Amino acid sequence: MTERAVPFHCPFCGEEDLRPHEVVSESGEVSSPHGTWECRGCLRAFSLKMLGLIRPSGAQS
Image (cartoon, rainbow, N blue to C red):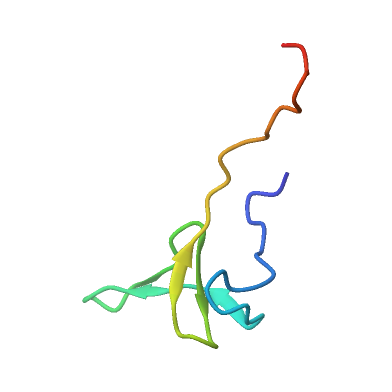
């Protein structure tokens, strides 16, 4: 699985114009925290995190 999977739409408004969310510090340094995205449609920033794979019901461990 890729480390940087891209979401296809905003979870708030459904817009597809998403970009990595960049944070500018007081010193002017730009960083992009892992898993953070911004929507140009509703102007919200959000983060995504994969928790893991779900085991199908009835599967043996």
